[in-house]
Every structure is written in C-alpha cells, then in structure tokens.
Image (cartoon, rainbow, N blue to C red; front, side):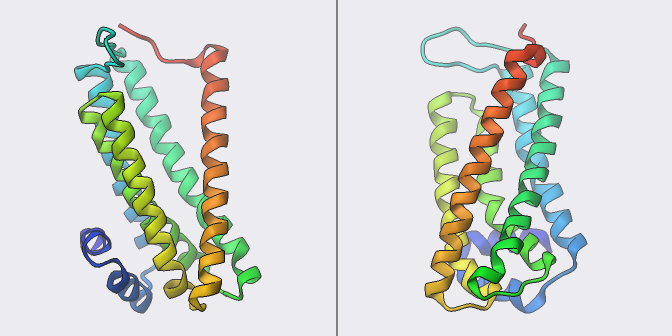
Length: 198
C-alpha cells in the first residue's frame, strides 16, 4: 500500500527501504505512487494561489486568476513527474559506474520514494508565506537527501562506501536538474507565458 511506504519512510526509513527492496513492486506501483503524491502539492498550490493569496514580506496579498493558477498547477504536476523520471534515468544510468545493476523499476522506486518528502513539502503552500514555504521546502530537501543516502546501499545492493559516492552523484545531478528547471521557468515567464494576476 502506498500510504504504508510513506509512513514507513518517515517513521523508520532504513527498515522501510529493506521492505521495499524485498517486495520490489511493479513499475505501475512506483508510477502510481508518484502520480498520487504529486497531486497533493499541486492542489495546494492551486488553492493557495487562487483563493488564499500569496504574501511576500509587508506587501499586499497577491492572487492569480483561477485559469492561471490551474495552468500553473498542471505545469507543476507535469514538472514533478518529468523530474522524477529524469532522476530515475540518472540513477539507472550511473549504476554501472558504482557496481550496481538495478532494473529501471528499482531506479524509479528509489527516485519516487526519495523525492516524496520534497514533493510533499509543497503542501506548505496552504500557508502561503514565503519564509514558511521556504523553510518547509528546505526541510523536505534535507530529508530527501537523507533518504537517498540511506536507501542507495539497500536498493542497489552495494557497500555503504560506494553507496555514499553514488548518492552524492545523484544529489549533484538532482541539484543541476533543479537549476535547469528554475532557469527554464524563468525563461518561459519572461517570454510572455507568466501567470495572470488579479
């Protein structure tokens, strides 16, 4: 059950990684996990942008039109799914360098479950204060990195020393993907495809 894995990754991550490794569900199970989890922050961001409004510092509250907020939420959803698959591909591609031979399903499991805290941190947008969302996002990133470092040796069946180097490479690749996503968003926004404000 998807929710069991989520709870386990927060409550006892090492044991949960071992459980995931023993079961190795199908590709559709890992895919359904990411498809469901990615809905939560997108729905929260839509509601916050269109109905609660964002406040940055002492400025007045800013709202997006409902159409614009929906378009941004859909783009966010597609971005989360694409980024998770890109991370899974990188995990799979780098595996041989570190002496691992995972299937793509194992790589997708590692990417999906590792990304879960960072994705779920998007729920913080229901309290749309920039400082709060930033702090929750950083906590989500930190916990995702911890999950990656603890999960790589278990799922990839390699020693912890090599797992540390492997996980460090994945973190670096993930940070580069995040920068590319941010730059792409900035380019799109500055070329007339930005949100519409109320």
